[in-house]
Image (cartoon, rainbow, N blue to C red; front, side):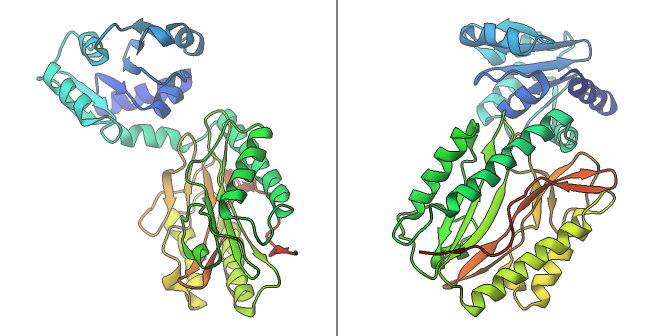
Length: 357
């Protein structure tokens, strides 16, 4: 945590910020180690304070030993503002995308002469590069996802519902050590598999269905992300065609990944293959994204992102084809960028799995 705070202080110095106010749970945890559901951080050049209420004081002292823990009674924002710099004309950076409007307006009212600026670009840049502990948490998460995929292959059959599959995955992953599963996991079958983020419904699995499963295990607060698509019964020629195009796009994208490549370049590798196969209009999302304490972090593997990949970044690679009325396929792996390429944490087969019944 000390190194993370020092990186933030370097950003403060570069930008002329007197202090940084951290309110979001993810950044509270990232910079302090504190996991409580309430509180805020105030980081200045020569101090770092964690404000929370009576319920979490002991927890905060245990989890954030490098911070001065201050208990607030009624108004958290009032106490933070009173603690911020004797010179109220200084610049305070805060998370404009995460701070509620009411909190922002209260800070503005209590520090009318202070300049309030957004800290997001700095915190996002720091969080792009994962340390060994973060990477290990995500590796463990994907290991659980791989185990869950092997398990669910024996569970899927005609007559069960998408919700049955989702519940079975959740129970299994928690038994394997996941503290939670990512909240937007996708279980979409048959024609519904054309929905990139189709949530599980009561739809009954039928013979001939694609079943697309996008899920992730959360370990120590860190997300993992995994997608495989299977077919129930013998696949049609078109199902095999679509699946093989997506698989080739994914595998060729993986071959291209390494430090020094831009997100835009990598997006074009997979997108180009799908476009040349005649399905460019059926691939509408980015090739992938970074993740960590949030399911979507920066950078994103899209045409508008010129970020250069660096060692320590963790990204997904997840091309897909989605055809309304027919169905869709997505294949997703999780990789970490290394100094000479990448390591793929996802071990599950990419051969099209045919569910017998």
